[in-house]
Length: 375
Figure 1 (cartoon, rainbow, N blue to C red):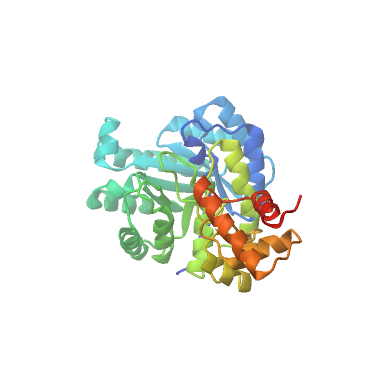
Figure 2 (cartoon, rainbow, N blue to C red):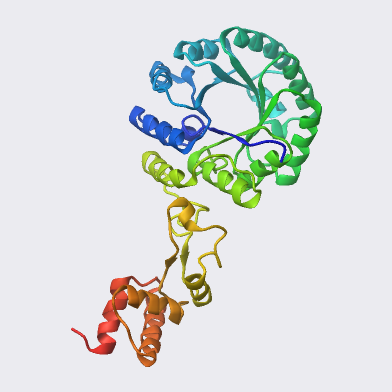
């Protein structure tokens, strides 16, 4: 790792672009507040050119006095620059279509791209303190084209270059190669990676980018975003810390309430097994696992769940063992002899298998009463 990773959250911009997701101003203020509390240093807070309402809401966010840096996203056109400037934002990220497929879909070509790069960057530098240039669909851009674009952008004195894996086709090896190459070519310019999760590699790709010398990465809470979403803030932060010993300074315990709120505000429910913040990622049923976890909470977890304000949960069902059952009974103030414990465990396994589900404590209590003849 070359430097401390700089985390940019784009939940309020790219996250809200997930189909059907709309954040109210109150939602945005709450999300921004939780991100600020967690210690996220920069937020991409929206696209002002969407509407006058969006422009006013971004202005309101900026006026709150949050500690994070606020950045607006813009297309490579004057209208977007003007809309961003009216919000009072001091930082802008300008996205340029660089791949042949994106240029063709817009009826543009390479000559338009390079000419517009010069015109827009010059204008942006006169209006904003910090200018980032994004290569949209960089991962599908012919390497010679991408190199020409990146080096030309760098020569214009911008602050940061964003390389976007817009349709999520990269893998950790190709990401590492790309960023190692540009880290060697560019001096004094920040390099940012923007990953999408279409092939399920966004988190790994982002960590690979940092390992190869990326300065920053843009992420969303819960991986919210278009199609399969973006690299997830909480996954990247946890992955950098626990897998790469590369802390970001972001508080994962605060992220727990942040992730929950974004679930509610977006209407996009996380999978129960979603890494880091899924409702059941610290739930265990296997008898072997539960027995070990009762002795050492780290025996079958990558990190202590108390780090994010959670605890290991033991599920009673088909795969349960005696240790988990005794622990559950103890929590209900029940102590049985070995014979009754074995009979009750057999009943738990039988009922769980028949009903194809885990058993709640209330279910176990019913079985206990039947076994012991308790009313």
